Image (cartoon, rainbow, N blue to C red):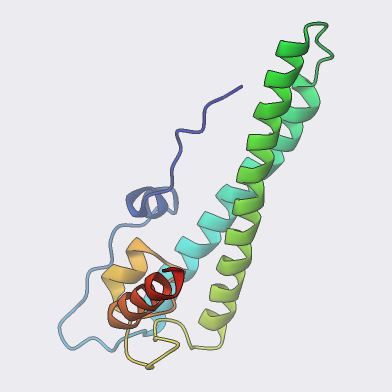
Length: 150
């Protein structure tokens, strides 16, 4: 089975979207039309790439299904398929987040913290396009989560 070495870092997200990091011009308004288009292209490219991976997994699973006579080989194949299915499930959840972010983009709510409504920032959004909290609110949320987990 193919190994999944295709972890989607922020640089990969920008590169397969065919965009360079956004160059902010002096006195440029935050989340103007040009910036919104930049992030729309990133999000749609990311979503399409994930959908292709999901489709390829379905095809691969159908093509590679074998009824091995050896129970160990059969168990190994089952485990590989289960791992792939768990990965695809995570990717489907990610697609839902991307779709929610695209709706925010359409409604002109993109780029602002859901908690305190301040600007999230272009660099943070390029690193994590589905970010919905500013760095301060995200840090506080992580601290709260750690405290609850104790």
